[in-house]
Length: 127
Image (cartoon, rainbow, N blue to C red; front, side):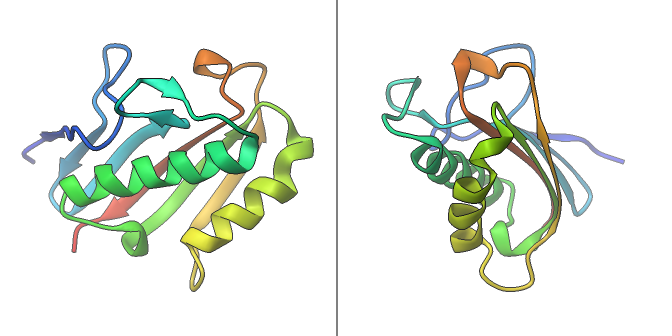
C-alpha cells in the first residue's frame, strides 16, 4: 500500500525525525500533538485545559491536511503528565468529541516534550 506523509503549516512542525501523520489507503495515523502554537513553536499559556484545547486544534488541522476530520477519529491516546488533570482534560476533550467519541486510552507519563501537560495522538479514517 502507498504511504503518504502528511505535513501542514497549520500545526506545529515535527521536532524530531517523525511525520505529523502518515496516510495509507483510508487510514491516517497521527503523531502526538502537544499544546504548541504553530506560529511560535512554544506551549500556549495556561493550564491543562488550554494545552488540551490547542493539542486538539492542532490534531484537527493535521487531520484536515490528510483528508479527514475529528469526526472520523476511531482511537485516541491521551498522555497526561499528571492524572489529577484528568477531569479538566476530559471536559475540554468532550467539547471536541461531543457525540459518538472515539475509543480512547489515557495514561500518566513521567514527562512529555517541552514539559507539556498533555499530548494526544489519533488514528482516523479518511472522509
